[in-house]
Length: 399
Ligand code: FES
Ligand SMILES: [Fe+2]
Image: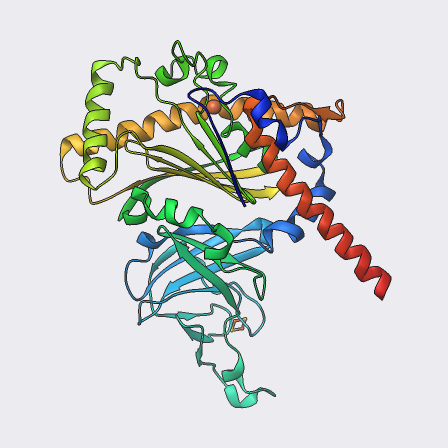
């Protein structure tokens, strides 16, 4: 079900109260036992973004991704028919991680331990001394993992039989995401960093504008304007577990000359590729991805939990075509440097927030109406954790 609340600027407290108004318990934000429940209830059962189709552009391309919250390493391949496939990166002989590089082009993979060799469709091609086994080694295939693609983003699901296809899971957002420049990206810029904080605290930092004026005072757009002094969104959308918002653009913002040059070049290249300058949509895809569709910053951030108190952020800007001119190169580098500057400012407060909560000093935290997306994430997480606990209890009672 989709619910949209919209206003000229910003959306009112009363209109957002239906998501909830109570204080939120702090323990889910730092306790390892809660994280273990999230691992089972969410990360091993949801569609999780692992990469983008431009990373495996042709038959034989592959990527390997660590997925700590699923206790997994994934091998994602493009087979000779162009089909995208995903496997656990675990050799069926004795479990060794089969591929130990991040990606490349290879249509067969040989295990470093005893030399079993697999195709990029997961089939065993050769096992030294096959006749000495008590099974038929050719029955041993790489364990397949469900995989889906939307707007170029590659998602996997560790559930052996996912309850919903990726398209069902994303529902009405599929059509919106497919319109984004990301869907046609051929390359990207990336940086990753680790944060000593829970994944939800890391995510929440990027789904509220309350902090902008304090933490990012140099950001022109954060300054707001007469109708919207703090630059709050003009629309919030709630789509089952997912969220969206329309970011407000300050019509009176005055960029510095070099910023105007970079934005002009970057936005022009995006617009030539069919994207509109006024589009500025944010999509929060449950559980740990958000995507910003803006002409100058076709952005995504995947927030990978490592432990209850450690998270890896993977930041990307997606581009269509190579940076084949100095102006395009400058525009892309400037967009990336700006994102990096903002994230440097964010990181310290995210970690400070985790330290404060993990001290156990506070039983509850508080979200105001313009932090509604943070509240929605907590609601969606806790709903699944509680359902999983009930499932465990029922299982225990029937044994
Ligand atoms: S563990 Fe892979 S060949 Fe033995
Ligand atoms: Fe921030």
